Image 1 (tube, rainbow, N blue to C red):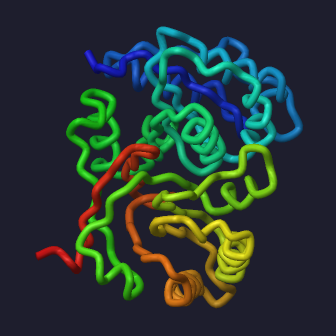
Image 2: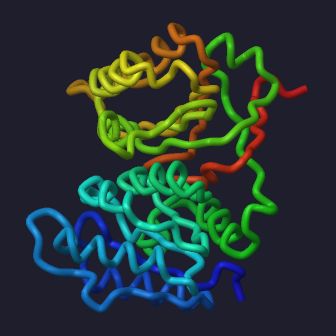
Length: 293
């Protein structure tokens, strides 16, 4: 039996079908895991899987369940940012759970990392794995973490983008971050992400070059990079120009050349064909690919 055996599936964001929920539940039950899904997970709402108060109640119930090991986002979309500020008055549960998710899940990563000091896992949604919409290596890596925890986790090698990164044989520290748009959305809120001393990870989907540039400029002008340790860019999928090209790589390169921090890339982490798991709020040591001896 897996060591992280009891999984709460949550849908705090976009709606999905009952068939997708059952498919996901069956997939993980067939792996020997115990799955909890609220009976009223789906309901009527303008944008999300259910009304705010019901989605919030589901989230709080999962966080407070003393028997739960994992809280897993069924799918992303939009909706968590409507709920996160309502978690701030909540008393921290005695038992820590491992939250898994990406994209919209970034908001919950920020809250759990900063306010409760919990470790979380940036990785594919539960539905994405159940439908096998990511590569075999991603699925195997995530399942190994469920079985063994982080004891056997080896961080992937980074690719340096700027001179400061090329001068570093390794990069050590705590990784935080997630979806660039969601992190920008936190600015000015009472759950604003705190980059102090951290390695920042960014990824996104369907953002054109000017949009990525605007978000990075906003964060820079808000002094969010002043006390960070380094920046890692994961995959930026989609967002092509009308002619089919992408300006995002050039935008990231220009940004890297004009910032005081070492900047790296990490292909295979984000919304692409692979979404390798990345532990947040845990001490990691990355090799730097071109600098290994």
